Amino acid sequence: MTAPHFSVPASRARATRLRRQRGISLIELMIGITIGLVLLTALASLYYANSLSRTEFAKSAEQVENGRYALEQIRREVELAGFFGVGSIARGATLAGPALCATDPAALGFDAGTTVPLALAGYAPGVVAPCLPDMSANSEVLVVRRVSTTAVAAPVPGVPYLQVSACPDDSVSFVFDASAAAAFPLRTKACDPGMRAELRQAVVRVFYLAGCDRCTNGGDGIPTLKMAELVNGAFQVRSVAQGVQDMHVRYGMDLDSNGSADCYVEDPGANNAAACAVVPGYDWTNALANWGNVTTVRVDVLARTLRPSGGQADNRTYDLGRAMASGPFNDGYKRHVYAQVARVVNVAGLREQ
Image (cartoon, rainbow, N blue to C red):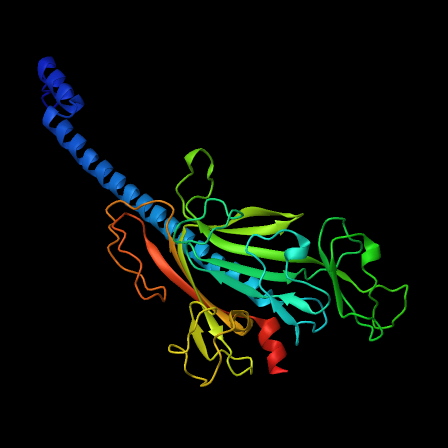
């Protein structure tokens, strides 16, 4: 016996197929779009926060690098200050204090085999210095004098060189001149007339602060540590580190000639008897002698970021060793003080010996 057969009406089958093929409703679409927008907003916020963090980290890293690099450059020069060749011509020599912007070889502090310039000199803010363009009004100035650590094979006319004798038969201990080779007759230890002592070029380097890195057309407004160097009879200026807004230099005085600093002063040329009474009876009346007794230098620099940070308000003060702190600046830049003590090896070392 055959089972009965029931057929589904065509209209019901078509309705079933339509229900199966039906898409999402408008409400479901709106809910999906809303969820997608929330996710996109969260991702965008996360990306923005990460980008902002990377930017701020880069600013801070640049500030740290500039502050430390500035100190490193000054330290290296201070340690070389007073290097006048392989001999000890500075021992017992008369000291001279050349003018800050002196360029004439005859005015650089070397004279007649008996006089050498100060290894270091410093100037307070407000000094008149035409060789230091764009100098900030509050800038201190640090001058380093020495000769090159690399000898030259032959002199260039017009460039000043120092020649130190190693022969006891030579009439003078050193010659300083900017003439031709005939002006440098001093000999080596062998005292052979055909073996001349080495020549070293005079070096004068001046550190100061400028209110701009690139100073043309009104300047870029970036405070910068700059260095002016005597090259071929004129001072040439280059930027050392951007973002250095302030610098303070204190000088360690060796009052008992043992090579170690007994106290720190801001101006060795002044009478510091009240502030530096460690060694009683020291005579502060000879400014050149005081500068000659500087054996260490403490440098404090205030470095800031090159670009301001959103929402940043720098209302702090910064201690650079002065009687009054720097700041507050009340702007959007981040700042930090970096400090370092550098030793004037070529002065302190001779005293320790």
